[in-house]
Length: 189
Image (tube, rainbow, N blue to C red; front, side, top):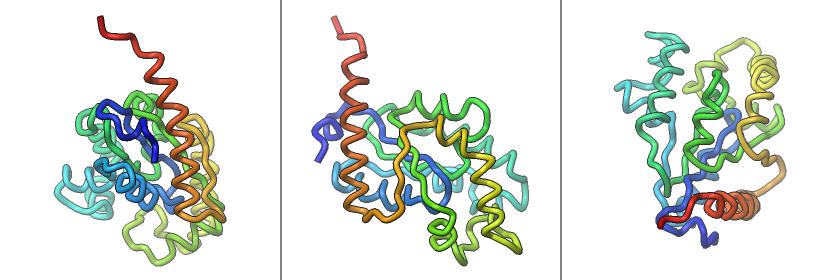
């Protein structure tokens, strides 16, 4: 268990990446291990909007959804001490990766198209995958988003790794980054 993660002033751990890479499952597991709150930006957006994400897309479009995501990050994330799973496209719009990095340590999860397809199959809550060819849509979105994901945070690949293995890997990354961040902060006088 990460000693830095258990400090009251520890930075947020923010998990970014494409849908189906394991952000929510890993985030919940780490929050439990670290005894920290777990937040999911998609759930926060739904609460803010008063309706489900597919309904937000149907009524108001993707642009409105992205504006709600920005509001959640800017105004509703705690300053520290939480584990946060981001929606799949949250870090993609201009300025969002920088905004998310200002809220904590960002780890971007990656998985193969095949893994993502398997994990998202039949999930009607994913409006961007409503397509006659979900695999082609995943490839198209991943290609468009890859650069944003690479710039958002430290990359961790989830294929072929158990949740336990991913916890250990992300804990090590978080520990290293949190120590460096805490060391770089000015000392109170």
